[in-house]
Image (cartoon, rainbow, N blue to C red):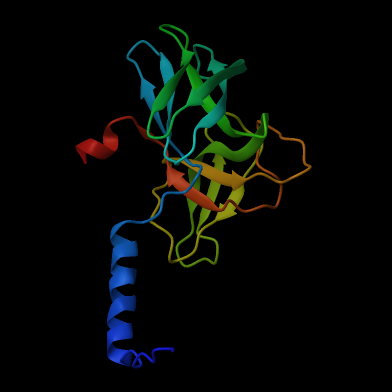
Length: 206
């Protein structure tokens, strides 16, 4: 013998849905993969890049690409440091420039481990806000932080305000089947996000 349950009132259903939405906003789901990057610059020219795993899964590797700088601040040669096995919520630091030997960040590639093999996940390019065009459909012109050779138009009126000359990271998902260029973004391709590249600890002080 089956039991017939009375229909659930619409107001009660609406209240349940509202509670679920509020809970989701209060506890947003963390993405499986993501990184947070900041820099450490010493008084003698030393330079480090800190990469924190903000995702819920381990990060197999972060490839840090940079350039050494001569006494005049010009690029003198490429640098590559690999950070491996970064657990969720933890960070590791890549030392690019030691005392008396300056350096600058060019790009970061992140890799995850899937079925025993590394899979390229994201590309992050270090840039600066070269020009601000208020009222334009594309408000910002972004240029390399350390080297010459590319510009990217980005931004809408809804995007966070960026200051001219400020350092940023241009974030791109990986294009499958395309060989990675560690020195520049893909031509004609807009980044999915642009975030400030700040000194480590700057956010906590502000």
